[in-house]
Length: 251
Image 1: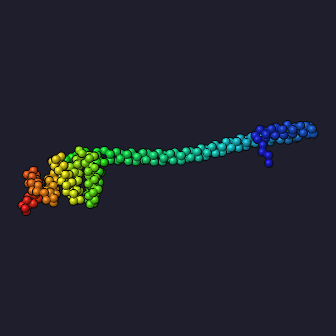
Image 2 (image 1 turned 90 degrees about the horizontal axis):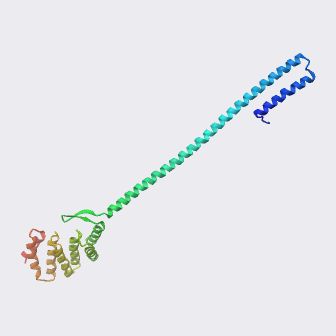
Image 3 (image 1 turned 180 degrees about the vertical axis):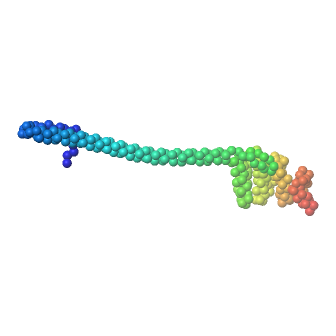
């Protein structure tokens, strides 16, 4: 069925209103009743036109309202879509911030590992480089594991690399012990003599002297007795001096 627009319906009504009088004029114009009927018909057509226009206006308003509702629905859908995108972006930003914090934390941890730290060795407080500490600990771990050859090489390398380290007196002392554990008494004596010469104030000095005396005894060197006597004189309050007295008393 063909739909008429508002202007089309109005035009149709006007045509009808124009055509009907012409038809009435053809045969019924002289009849008063016919004129009255014509006037009534015109009135009805006018009422129909007004009603039709009103209906079309109402339909137009409804159409506009529906269009607005559809537009609002579309806008709400777009807003919901944008909210979803914002939420995704917010999550990505949060994850990026967390990764950045983790990166900073990891970087700070790495930097701290590279920074010197304060240690106390045999009553002395000093700043120690992390690599320096790891090298010493690794060498001592080999000694404790009984790998005296590897320990001796590692300790000798440590002494060369870190001559001023707070660990160096101990490293030199344990280097002498690694030689002694390998039954290399001459090298052991030489290593312990370095302790006495360069680190005479080290707590390891009395033990170094006692170890020298032990090696001399094994080598049947008569200097062992004098070494024990010197030990007692130089370090009278040490545990090594007490051991030296026992050894001299047994002779």
